[in-house]
Image (tube, one colour):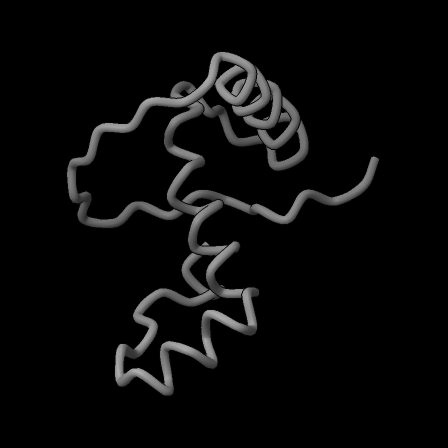
Length: 83
Protein backbone atom coordinates (compact mmCIF):
# COMPACT_ATOMS: atom_id res chain seq x y z
CA UNK A 1 0.00 0.00 0.00
CA UNK A 2 1.32 3.47 -0.86
CA UNK A 3 2.17 5.77 2.03
CA UNK A 4 -0.32 8.63 2.54
CA UNK A 5 0.85 12.25 2.74
CA UNK A 6 -0.55 12.62 6.28
CA UNK A 7 0.91 10.98 9.34
CA UNK A 8 -0.06 10.96 12.99
CA UNK A 9 -2.39 13.86 13.83
CA UNK A 10 -0.94 16.29 16.40
CA UNK A 11 -3.02 18.02 19.06
CA UNK A 12 -3.02 21.82 18.86
CA UNK A 13 -5.05 24.68 20.34
CA UNK A 14 -8.09 24.87 18.07
CA UNK A 15 -9.81 27.82 16.44
CA UNK A 16 -13.45 27.00 15.76
CA UNK A 17 -14.75 27.34 12.19
CA UNK A 18 -17.76 25.94 10.36
CA UNK A 19 -17.60 24.70 6.79
CA UNK A 20 -19.91 23.07 4.30
CA UNK A 21 -18.68 20.46 1.87
CA UNK A 22 -20.15 18.31 -0.83
CA UNK A 23 -21.33 14.90 0.34
CA UNK A 24 -18.85 13.28 -2.05
CA UNK A 25 -15.96 15.17 -0.40
CA UNK A 26 -17.16 14.07 3.04
CA UNK A 27 -17.38 10.49 1.80
CA UNK A 28 -13.78 10.68 0.55
CA UNK A 29 -12.67 12.25 3.85
CA UNK A 30 -14.20 9.35 5.77
CA UNK A 31 -12.51 6.87 3.41
CA UNK A 32 -9.17 8.68 3.82
CA UNK A 33 -9.53 8.54 7.62
CA UNK A 34 -10.16 4.81 7.40
CA UNK A 35 -7.07 4.19 5.25
CA UNK A 36 -4.91 6.50 7.40
CA UNK A 37 -6.11 4.79 10.56
CA UNK A 38 -5.18 1.38 9.20
CA UNK A 39 -1.82 2.67 7.98
CA UNK A 40 -0.80 4.46 11.20
CA UNK A 41 -2.59 2.29 13.75
CA UNK A 42 -4.23 5.48 15.06
CA UNK A 43 -8.00 5.45 15.57
CA UNK A 44 -9.56 8.45 13.83
CA UNK A 45 -13.00 8.79 15.35
CA UNK A 46 -13.71 12.15 13.70
CA UNK A 47 -12.58 12.42 10.06
CA UNK A 48 -13.02 16.21 10.15
CA UNK A 49 -9.86 16.28 12.31
CA UNK A 50 -7.97 15.53 9.09
CA UNK A 51 -8.95 18.83 7.45
CA UNK A 52 -6.37 20.94 9.30
CA UNK A 53 -3.41 18.61 8.70
CA UNK A 54 -4.47 18.39 5.04
CA UNK A 55 -4.52 22.18 4.76
CA UNK A 56 -1.14 22.45 6.49
CA UNK A 57 0.30 19.89 4.09
CA UNK A 58 -1.27 21.59 1.08
CA UNK A 59 -0.07 25.09 1.99
CA UNK A 60 3.32 23.82 3.09
CA UNK A 61 3.98 22.24 -0.29
CA UNK A 62 2.52 25.03 -2.45
CA UNK A 63 5.64 26.81 -3.67
CA UNK A 64 3.73 29.69 -5.24
CA UNK A 65 1.91 30.37 -1.96
CA UNK A 66 5.12 30.31 0.08
CA UNK A 67 6.86 32.64 -2.37
CA UNK A 68 3.90 35.05 -2.51
CA UNK A 69 3.62 35.11 1.28
CA UNK A 70 7.29 36.11 1.56
CA UNK A 71 6.82 38.88 -1.02
CA UNK A 72 3.75 40.30 0.76
CA UNK A 73 5.27 40.18 4.26
CA UNK A 74 2.72 37.61 5.42
CA UNK A 75 4.98 34.91 6.84
CA UNK A 76 3.67 31.38 6.75
CA UNK A 77 3.17 30.16 10.31
CA UNK A 78 2.32 26.54 9.54
CA UNK A 79 4.89 24.04 8.48
CA UNK A 80 5.19 20.46 7.42
CA UNK A 81 6.76 19.56 10.75
CA UNK A 82 3.36 20.11 12.41
CA UNK A 83 1.60 17.29 10.59
